[in-house]
Length: 304
Image (cartoon, rainbow, N blue to C red):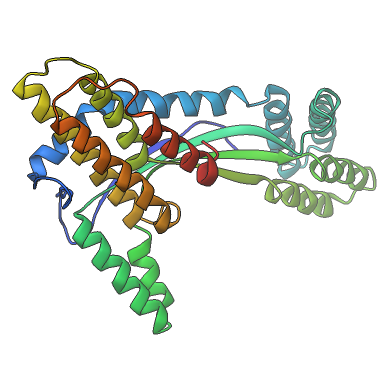
């Protein structure tokens, strides 16, 4: 097993559409304008994603990685019929994992690898909603695989996959393999080591991109709202940011990130912010409520 970080980036479309739709609650926006709004916060979104990945990578336990590498070597040695080296490498693997258990007695899963996958659909809200309706109809007709092909593309997220060693069972497999080798039962030992590999647990943390984009759009809008004597250009930018942030939340809602009904209070708060913005006056802490709502939403559904 080669322990290494891998990063994939997939941009998905529905029906070949490379279009972003504006929110119906605000002035209609062109696809280019929505794309520009998303691009305007891309740097902040990327930084936040990279920070989340770095946090996951920092949780990796080097002794656990060493144990898995020694298991790798042991399996290769056993394939060559080198029992002496196999036992030595398994003994090292056991020592490594027991060191992890000694230092972290309450830990159930020991992280050994992190892989990041970015999936970002590019389609209009109308297209996404039609796709969801189509998939629902297919499921009702029992056409699960046809529905699956549609649903698999309905995502806009960063997925952080962490491979973990289950500390409750993994050491036992290694010790069992050593005992079997002592009895010259090489095939049985090899099977046990395969079982050890198959017990590795993959956990997934999801960061929904539309919600993160909305957060950073609100941050930019807040700075403008707290500016006194806004110019016409600043006023337009402020309202555009609110409209684009709402679009991102509508996108998250359409893609099924959280309960649909939970978005209503957020939309209502955006309407309130839009009314304040149109007055053209300086407003301090106007975004506290929407920031709190999104923060609670992310913590509840994504632990983020």
